Image 1 (cartoon, rainbow, N blue to C red):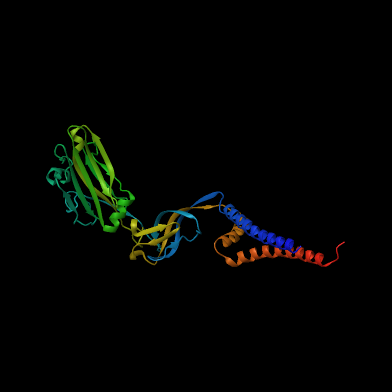
Image 2 (tube, rainbow, N blue to C red):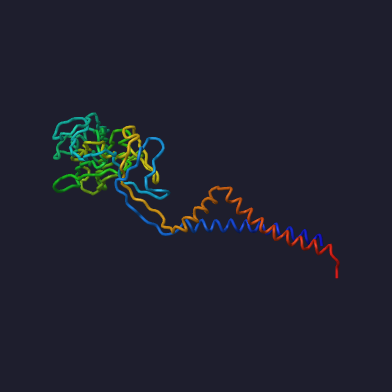
Length: 337
């Protein structure tokens, strides 16, 4: 009989272990059910985010653990007027030839291994042109120093032999990485490549430097000799002329990570921002949220809650086990009929 009792005790211990394992699987399944469901998207305009710093990122005020897509941010002020000025910069290193009235730097550069061949494309005249000599490619590197308060809505006007009608040029926009590099270095780095290949096709390709590589903005390739011609290029700067407040926080002066935002410059450090963004979150019932809180606590390390539940299971099983062993013990000491 003693052996039977020992076997039953071992079976009871095994049952306790099974209960613990089953409980863990149940908790995991419950956690999954509470973190899934339908989603809801919401847009927020000009929400105040207090004391944005260059250190610890600030969370958007109304958000808790959701995914965010940021649009723009403005420094908070009692009043502000946001206006923009367009001006043309014909040359990287001069202020003549029809430039606009806004102030900008004129210490840019032109660099090329075929500057003589390409000079007609940077002389201020849309009639003259430059191009590579036959069976070669000529690269012209153009570096504009960024004007003060320039915005990423600025445009690069270019004219090549593939444009056949008025106004004889097209405006190119720049992708994010080109502005990112420009804001860090305060220089917008551009490139135009003229290829003249009499045996195949000719082309003119326009690029901007995007942190690690040249990013193609426009490239037309045709058998016609005109396709290799570079007629002109210039910048149409869009300048933020805000008054009564610092206004729009430009391009790479801020960064985001999920639902957090932080300043990348001391100019806007420790100031209140008004930001526009959208966010997506799951839709859950209040009961699911309440239960989910407990399940999350169990899964993220609230040890005392876990211990209480596991010990509770164990005490219940051991109580039943002890009762059974007691009865067996009483039966062994009594008479046998």
